[in-house]
Length: 600
Ligand code: ADP
Image (cartoon, rainbow, N blue to C red; front, side, top):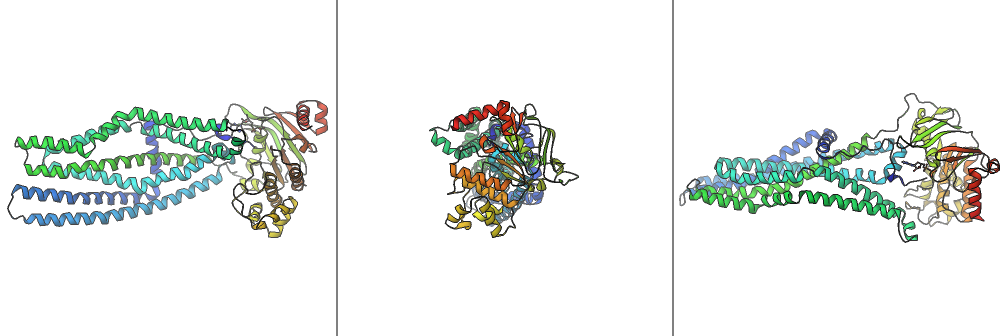
């Protein structure tokens, strides 16, 4: 079946990404909803961080106060000095204690919510229509399970504490400085406020830019997976052509997105960094301070408080900036996760029906991916039990789509499909999938032993039943030759097995399951003649007595089918047995002549 789905539309797919302020608000809402179960922990973590930050400022204030006391009356005995020493030391100790506690609460909340979200995502993935996976590709799942969750982790475990801490330091520091001297405090805080203004300007459009970058990253990730999957083609033809172009386009888009962002914020960002530095505050405090002292408007001793405390305040700006970026990213991660979680599950029937038998009927079936063009249109077909129906037609004719509607990869947009007289939408999806074996080209083998790979068909099957299925699928001898026989662990690519052998393994799986309906997508790639014959024999064993629907690419393999449906542009154009269709001299006869021409 076709798997180049990421350029295609997912029916009812993810809504387009919001941008700018709207996205920021949506993100904040999403974050609040996802974090609801740990709200109390987060509040505790924020309070502890704030207290810890305030306590951390105490030693500096103590130093400033000692200096003020000593400089104000040099040579006198200062008992208050020792009190400030004690207060400063207590502040430092308390800071450490509170920091450990806030980190402990934050990491507990982090572990709890990430576990809950992972479970929710995995459960939800299990209930999504299978067509979603084809259309969205593994890039989307990977991004949610790693990138988006990692961003949530950043918020809970780091950003929240850093942000509350930094804001508290600035607030407590500002309050202290205002108590010491208002005009000087306003001078120092003015520099910080200006930093804030430039920072705000440079960050205004960050959400929109980050959305664009994240979208480009998702495309790069999907394109690289696709490129790696198609590496054989890439090597064989010297260039990946389409695959490489898609990767290049994604990388170019990423570069363009980044360049646009940099161009927009370069001045405001540089200004905020310059003003938010210790040097800028030191320069402002020294210039204004010495002028005030010269005018007699400020006691020289009080200037020390500004040199000790105000100059340290910019140090909180960078963590606050980084943390607020972390929160912004977290919001986007939350939006991504909510989008995934809100993707409609496959609707389950309210009044479930059980099929009576396993005949399949397509009744005036239509389906459109995008709501505009029908990929399948008005197809009616009856497939009685014990018969083989082949679907043929040129590439893009709708064969894969039609077959995928039967196991409800997507739901029909017109007409109905029935199994044993019951509409597939009225059969619980687990029962529906259990009633059929799907043997596709993109052979899915798990990183597990050969025996377990076959046993997926029926988890309670005995070793002997697994062996019998392998014998029937003409793959037993191959397995026996593997280093550990049935215990040999395969990698995801089915390591060491040829294409035909891997396909026979999945056929053994299907034979073991004993499902009465078989949907199979015949391999497009030619196998060597021995393999081909073995696969054909295996399929014959699988098909015996079942309702079989084959998507056929090579016509000679289905010349014996009970009926052949020819599709063109999603519409049925011919139907009948091989001989009748040849005699008709229509599309099928032309396809046959073309393939025979290639074969001879
Ligand atoms: P075939 O199997 O006969 O080659 P398909 O069923 O794969 O044909 O495709 C039928 C039509 O539907 C084609 O025009 C194809 O581009 C389109 N199509 C297939 N899958 C998707 C998808 N996920 N999203 C949008 N269009 C799709």
